[in-house]
Length: 317
Image 1 (cartoon, rainbow, N blue to C red):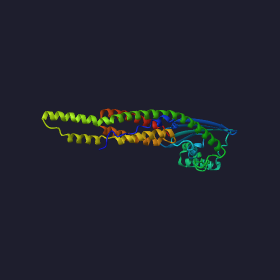
Image 2 (image 1 turned 135 degrees about the vertical axis):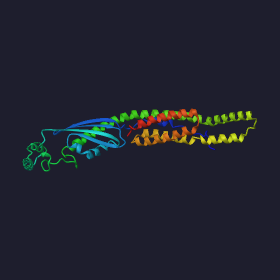
Image 3 (image 1 turned 45 degrees about the horizontal axis):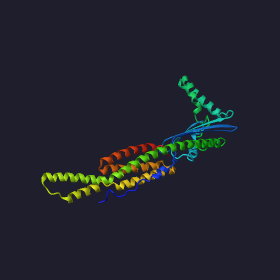
Image 4 (image 1 turned 90 degrees about the vertical axis):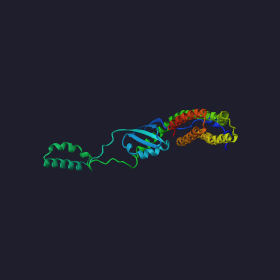
């Protein structure tokens, strides 16, 4: 029979007291502007939560077409989250209009007029002619892949890098606040676990006393002799059934690991999610096995705090 009074090491308090919080939040904003003789480039980056990295690009053509190239720059700074990137390019002077193939356009328009005349539907000439520019061979095709314009890309890349640096500055500041809140919840769970640890030795003692009182009363009422072996066996079965010392030890270890991940901070979000899941599993087992009202109250408080941890850690990269 395992003893409930086995010594279980307390949570390493120093870990969460010394943790300084170097986590990165997944929400933030960064902006940068770079000007040259030929260009003015402004970039804004907004980040929100996401389990994976997702990039959306808006702004001046042709940059919404080059998400893959822009994502390579983003990945130097960000690992998780949805990033909304807005790029505005102000070009000095007027860019030359795309060269149209006027001969092909004239041929299309002639065919449209001839076809409508033959069909007796002259009213369709105008609406059909309005779409002539989109017909094959009239206007140069817009690029939808490859690399961005060589004369602009270095400036755009530099502006995006600068905006992402500012984004990360904000994410670090928010990460400090998130880390402080996570550690506050961590401390609550550690306190509740410490209270459970002090209650464990008395659980079996109280149960044994209740059994003895009931048996003595029954023996007295029936005029029977008390069988001590039966009482001992019943108490032993209860002690083995309600022994949560292993669960308490594992939860203690998870708490230490949780604080250590916050202290390190480097891309800790998914690891923290996993540790919280394991903490929840051990907490549920303690609640179901302990068989004590006072312990159950502490377990309820721990579950409530774990739920707050789950919500908060969703904002950690």
